[in-house]
Image (cartoon, rainbow, N blue to C red; front, top):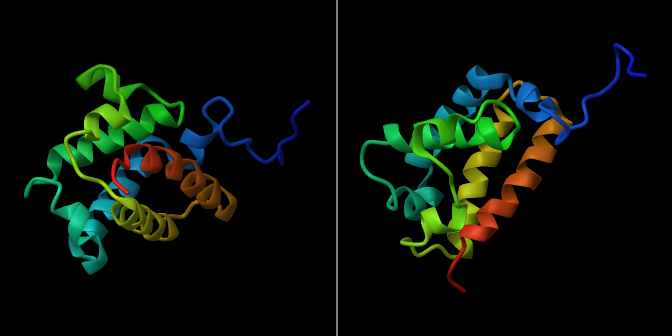
Length: 137
């Protein structure tokens, strides 16, 4: 039996999607992530992997995160199925690039009004696909 004060179990059902603030909360996270990637000197290498206009990248990451966190499958609705490593295979991505991506995401997460345990959970979970796209050293 669940009580009104029960903590969400992230990764179960759509608890993570709701902990992130749903579609609107994820849009804020993604926008802040790309703003940071566009301005943080340590992210120069990963920013260079993207086109000048980040509109499509923002849309794709937002849509991916919606479905990945067990919310609506927005990515599949617009772009079809996704294989994270295959989508990034044309890029040279090393450990430093992975770490820069995660650092920008960690900073973006820190600025969101999410519960601290959700922030820790989410960055831990995001480290897995970030590692899967690494294809050098």
